[in-house]
Amino acid sequence: DDNLPLYDVKRVHVFHSATATFYAPSDPSGQGGMRREHIRATPSWRKGSPRYDCVFLGKDPSARGFQSLHAARIRSFLSLRVGSSWSASSGSSEFEEIPCAVIEWFSPVGEEPDDDTGMWVVEPDLDIDGQRELSIVHIETILRSAHLIPVFGDEPIPQYLTASDALDSFRAYYVNKYADHHAHTIAF
Image (tube, rainbow, N blue to C red; front, top):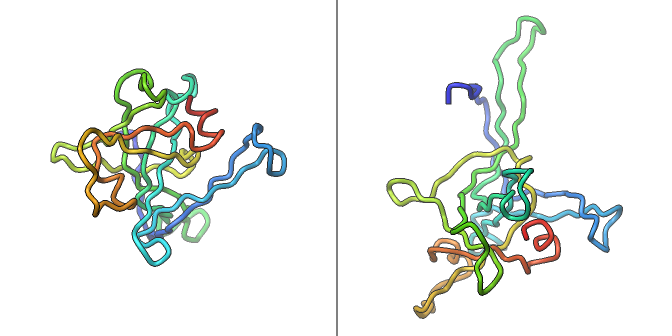
């Protein structure tokens, strides 16, 4: 897109987690309805398998429920240090830190939730080579964590499949509206 700004990236910092703080007036605990949750994107969780959490991102504030959201999987958190190397007006270097996330997109299957479960079904977005589509988004577009459950199908699940492989091993996933009352309230 010709309208996108060009940045001179000076430094990239990688982080393995972020904290989402949001207002949740329906939450019976917490001070003033504020809630905090940790979102992880780490190649080794507790000295074991990787953990890449899923999130809701804002899409269309005029829509209701899940139609106002995107589902995505965080692959990495980044802080980009961008700017010019020298500013004549201030006589110094001018830099800005931009907090970002590398994400994999999931798109809804159909226009309504699944009839049997009442949950939306999503599938990973793939590029022309069949690889997961990745994007970099500003961290402020992340609303909160999300929980995706595989649509298992009729075939037996291999015994070697681990929880860390689940989001790479199935064609479609349910957006779990039963994960907590916040997910149920905002997504459905």
